[in-house]
Image (cartoon, rainbow, N blue to C red):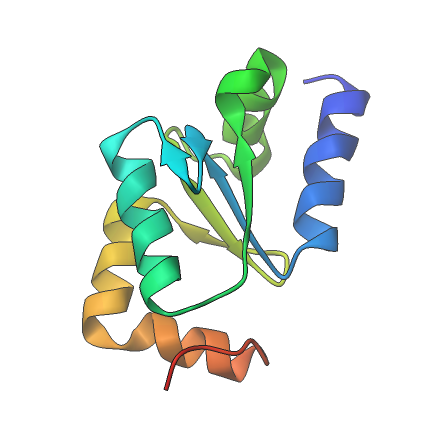
Amino acid sequence: MDQLVKDKIDSEIKNNDVCLFMKGTPDAPQCGFSMTVSNILKMLEVNFKGVNVLENQSIRDGIKQFSDWPTIPQLYIKGEFIGGCDIVKEMYESGELKTKFTSSGINVKS
């Protein structure tokens, strides 16, 4: 991955407390997995930045190398890679995701 792509990804993660690399946008997800994670964040009323990887092939390929994770969506909280759809869904169902947000100082629905 070239340095420009790495810097762009790094910037999105650093400048947004909650950053979701996804297919489509939060208002118009273009895959079921991206929609699931986006909807979980919306149910928790978390402010997040959605990065549409379909708009930029180099970002789409680059994020997989960046995280060493093969699939999209990818969720980052305060710069930390959390995981993809299955992990986020499990964390949401167990209450672990809400705890992660609150312990990171991110407001969630009570």
